[in-house]
Image 1: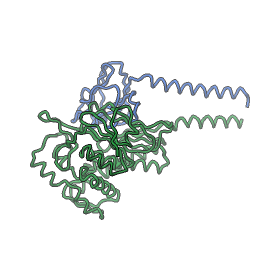
Image 2: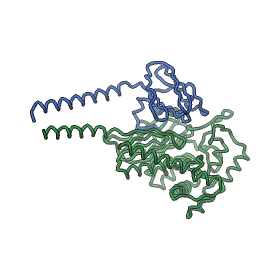
Image 3: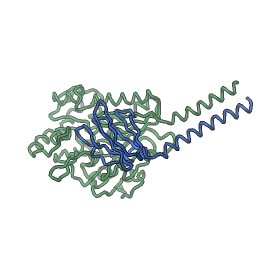
Image 4: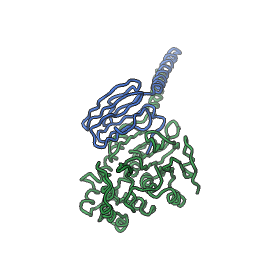
Amino acid sequence: MKTRTWILLFSALAAVCLLCTFLILNDASTGGTATVRSDGVTVMTLDLSKDGEYRIASDYGMNTLRVENGKVSVISADCPSQDCVHHAPASSGAPIVCLPNRLVITFSTAQEYDAIIG
Amino acid sequence: MKKTLALSLLISVLLCGCAVNAPVEREIFAMDTVMMLRVWGNESDAAAAVAEINRLDALLSVTNENSEIFALNRDGEAELSMETYDLLVKAVAVSRRTEGAFDPTVYPLVEAWGFTHDAQAVPAQDEINEALALVGYEQLENHLDVTCLSIDGMLDFGGIAKGYTARKVVDLLQERGVDTAFLNLGGNVQTLGSKPDGEAWTVGIADPENPSQAIGCLRFTGSLALVTSGGYQRYFEENGVRYHHILDPKTGYPAQSGLASVTVLAKDGALADGLSTALFVMGMEEASALWRASDDFEVVFITQDGIIFATEGAASLLTDCEFTVIKR
């Protein structure tokens, strides 16, 4: 095999590695995002540096989320228990969960742990 | 040309290797909680894990009208499958070891307090006494050699089913050739093997004062089950008094043992699940005595004052916090 082919192949491999490294580092450095999932499907990624209100409707019910001061909270939910509404505004730690409406909000910074139990 | 092909193949294999290191993730709703699964395998392995959870949910649920447990509670007797019987034996074993601090017949009390629905209130003493008369794992013991069970009260595997399910799922994954998985079944963590990169699993213990944040971290490699029971998880307030959901099967009231949470580590998920409730009810002194007489679990206690105690085996895994070691 020609030297040129080798160079080409290794350059391609190096480029893929660089791209992977960039993507991984870039993902970790963003830090302040929250992923909103409805019945296991990602429906929204929230940038916690941008204030706003979002309504998430599904077959199971409706939740309204608010991003303010770098944190996300659930300000209203049509579920009976209201556990998610009672959850303090958060930007890290265990997910905010609305069980009846099958809504889960996870944080990019929570990856410090595989899980928080309790 | 051959060399080029071989090299291309090598690169493909290397790149695929990267992909194998990323787990297949699933989030599902079952057993009245949210479950997060990470399986270092293929899509069909993850699908099999989800199917197994849903199968066990239907089998063991106290509210599913098609479950054996529902039939038993409705009719007062039912024929049990070997699998339900197997879990019943495990549950009764935990009850015996903890002298009834864990009791799978506690459901009438849970109902009386309204923790099965969203109308919680302190019941009248008469109502508590009526429920207490139906509670007692001893009524199950007489039937442990047959698979047809009759019962005066009600059977509920809620305090042990998630841990049992976690164990069954990792067994299934292992049979399919999966070496690594991390399951979080609503706070019941079960690991299988070690992370492909060799790093430790990191499981934070929730701070009872601020449950979305960790107060300490357990770092370990290999397969282990971890379960936390805490009085802060579900509660209601009446006349300024807080009543939590972990009921003492002997008094009929929420356990007042001075503990805010108990985290149990064990190889067996069902044991960890059942014991976490029982040790919370028993309190630190009695629970430590049980630990000293046993060799199949370790514990982290957090008292209501926020002080952390860890048994020797748990202490060797606990980081990021100050704690006192409980010695044998």
